Length: 66
Image (cartoon, rainbow, N blue to C red; front, side, top):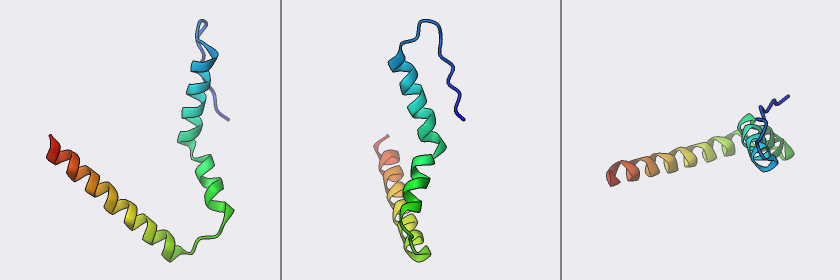
């Protein structure tokens, strides 16, 4: 269960934005999407390796730019 603290004069849009951000951090949607179809472990590992290489590449580019 998610609890969102809403202040007295806070708009509904701002409260909804807080809720969406908190809900996204829980990872529920990601979990549901991953359970929709079976993915072989070797394919999952391959995707993780590709993602890790991409993140490393982006980090090195950011470090070079500074």
